Image (cartoon, helix red, strand yellow):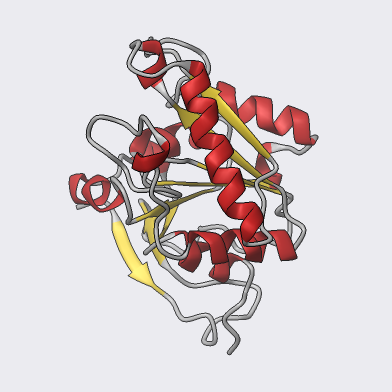
Length: 219
């Protein structure tokens, strides 16, 4: 297998590096060495923020936050790092959910966050079911829109997703990327990651990823 999976301990290396599991095709420590540059977090939605569903989330009742999501968002809010959600919602394009219904789900999400003194800065959605659409991941259109609006470059941002197409969208614009094991993440790892999306940093869930990126766990 050409992929090399390993872990390093934050205390063993330096506090400027965080630990996790790394896929690196070369087997060398060529992963992202510091996130001091980070000015924007890009989050996939289903499988990262809320529980993924085989037939898509179509109502408030079906929108169920994953454990640790609110604390993770609060950590980013405290660090004054903007958060943009970049999500495919072809359920709208297929006619199974209206745009108003989708907006209601997102309003519900924002209401939950507000009750916890947390917030998301912006949500970017592609409702097209056309795989060739420039904004439908793995195409990077949503990410590019977010970078433009927040006036940051790709290397100043970080994408956290659970699906190969998230990683592909980030790789297309040379944006650093993390895969979480929630949602489709574990299944994505089992299939193996193609070399062109590497290196990828892997964490259990959003909270673990965010807490390590922000160096919340002290040596």
